[in-house]
Length: 176
Image (cartoon, rainbow, N blue to C red):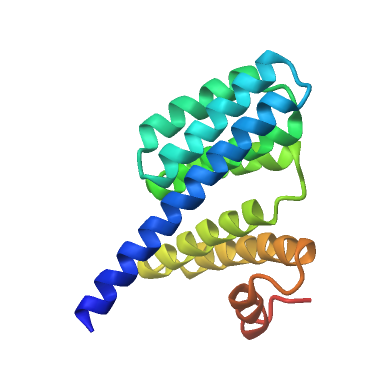
């Protein structure tokens, strides 16, 4: 059983490497072929490099690339994904206030990012659980209510996704 798990892990790693390499090759070809400005091409390259660094857990390098991409990118839709990924890094680092700020900024540019609403809800729910552990049920309920609002928005954008959130909304009678 142990050997099987090791083999599966190696296989997943190789597949991930193949997918990452394939994405890099295809995206590089598209960037060369699509008639966009050199500034937009550079922004995409920084974004792609940021995604690669982020997937490897190199968050400092990813942030540097994302900030450089933000400096160059002018398209609000593309900027929303850069901001979203910056929010993901701050979430991973436990910097929830910063993460929320970046998710808000992403949604200002693209209000159709259900994953941003979901992540905001997860942070609010976590803060609600923290408030319960600290004995402050009133603050907890406020956080849970805010989480519910964000999850409702995520679910409205992608019905059928976020099943656990949907169940939580029903169980807590927050789904209307």
